[in-house]
Length: 175
Length: 359
Image 1: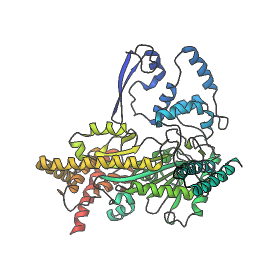
Image 2: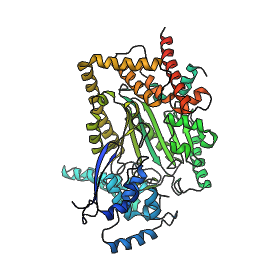
Image 3: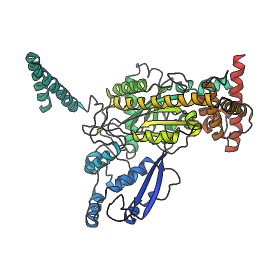
Image 4: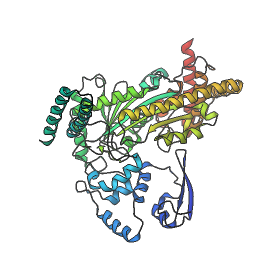
């Protein structure tokens, strides 16, 4: 059996972890097991979300050693310009320092979002004050959909009205 | 303090029970996380930045003081409370252990009926929490959503078009909503069906935990089911998904209760009355046993096997027999051994009190 992390080396360590009643089996090679480090021995005081998260973050390391070294240097230097938190610090504590960290660590956070949430794009509520442009764009999308339907049932007057509304909103976005 | 007064002052709205399907759903909670734009998250904020957050939130709250849920609400700073007072708020599920123990410049806005609590400078600048008795997730979300809009009239939130609401922990990003219900599932536990149920729940993106959150034991057959995913789904979808899964769990628990009653009525009756007898007469009671016995008694009440005890006795006693409450009731610090004795006294008094009340 190959290691489930790198998929290259044979798995030599097999263990089962139970989190909230959910059983997960792990089959790791020695190298990947070492990278997971302290997570392997069954933790005495439970398993916190931040520890779990930091495990996921460290998993992102690429497979070949050369690349890995390069990446480590890069991520070590990766630092949020606003609050000063480094990516290494973040991967240890699992928490971000400020809203700009999302920008600074963006590329490395996206795979994490995919893993944790199965998605990388917000679809929920938009705040009035700071989400104005997104609100407008969502409205434009909605109107375009309505416009298509109007054209399909040949309601051209209505369609013209919608088109004007869309143009007005687009101007607002540009301006 | 007299028992009656103690109970009066101890009870939050959610502990008073009632609400739809309250025989199985103890409470419904929605919590949304928000951060103020332009200020570092609490973990990295300086003292003056944290103080600034409290100041802005308090200002917004005062501006909206006429809102029905804010009218008799107050802002309480953590540093004005002693350890015991903080602990009591944690045991009532109104603030998190993190806010009580680790936050710097932490504060909470609490509504008069304690259905709304807004934590300030917890892991995020704001954690808006609405806690309702019974199965009322949609109502809890509606109120939390409304409070969020109300505060947003005065506060600019950290928001990104792609990532949504930005939170200190990336597992909360997006909607930043965590919705959960506290379920009492004794029949599924007795019939050993939880082992099959829980993996199924986690497969649909929900999490199951003991009542005191992450890593805690499931005492008294009480479980918390909550959403895990916060990015990529709309708030309503998240709530609807949870409502529908919880609806199915309720059905399963109900049918397990019916089957137990049909297949082994005497054994069930013996179990619940035995537990009632122990609670009514024991002199020493540790918290684990208390929770298990209370769970049995509550099942007995729900099935009509025990009469003359109100169904809220479990909700009340599982909170009031916690260390913080026991010490508050005793008016002094107690070591664990003393607490087991006081716990037995409180439970006996509470059950007898109910009895006296009826006569």
